[in-house]
Image (tube, rainbow, N blue to C red):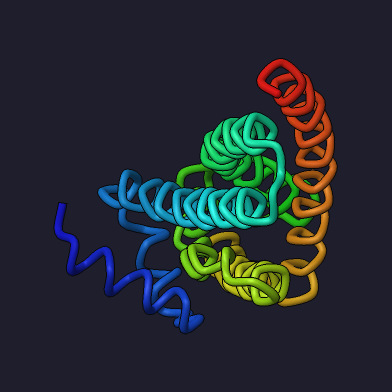
Length: 203
């Protein structure tokens, strides 16, 4: 795979270059590259979370925390990091499916699933910056900024892919995003419960 073209497209997506989303919408050869953008973004977020866990564990050790508890917390962090990557990819497909269905069935958009999926994949590009989320005081702010940034990129991606006006695109985007947030909350609750169980076993 041409990494230079991948990097170039990710930068253009992050710059909200409308022509990029129109370009990838029609290029069926970019299915794997769009998925790779999502995986890179998810891995960046996972690495950021893992580094945050490592830093927290080290600080906990320096402050005299129970070593076994710190080790258990670290293992839970690894477990959660893996789930960040897995769920981000799953969420990507769900988000593409929901927005494509809403856009075509409620607003007579013209895109098929592949077109929406490719365009949305590149909209994840800003989330690569979440690799820096381990930095104290910056992580929460960075997560908020990249989320808004991704939504802005997704707006242009969906507008170009579905050929909708701005109002219909926003409605489609919001419906899809709300559904993803609900699913994310439910899965996070399950993962949190499993994480607490694992932490109890390891501590």
